[in-house]
Length: 157
Image (cartoon, rainbow, N blue to C red):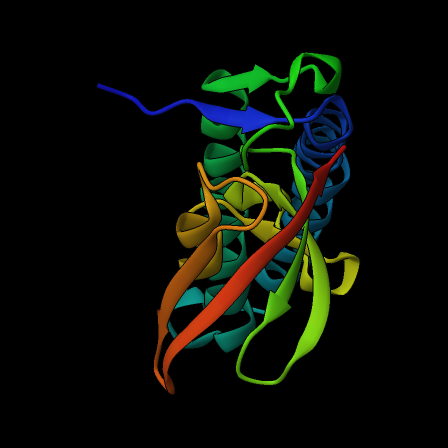
């Protein structure tokens, strides 16, 4: 049974655009590299040809992964999100009890996670620890450095 990949419309559009780019420009670039390597002679001793074929395999693997992500995608409407508890697409303001610092993260699918944009995956240790909590509740997250407690201060869109 396949698992759904919950995405925002923005995330869906980004993946779709990346897939189109790889299918067109990416495949053309790899085909050109293979053709150039073939022109250099004996394929059995041609490292450039081997590298180009490896690049082709990696490209096709990435295309397959993106196609699977889109085929299992379910687009979430942020206006339908319940902010009484932490769910996917929630912004969560929380207090790190160890460092006494406040941080805010948005919980997103794994394919949309980006720490620089303060978006963490719901399947990450922190994301899993926060899911279902309400304001005032404590998430106990096990990390390599030990258990860290986060107090949920606010939940918003």
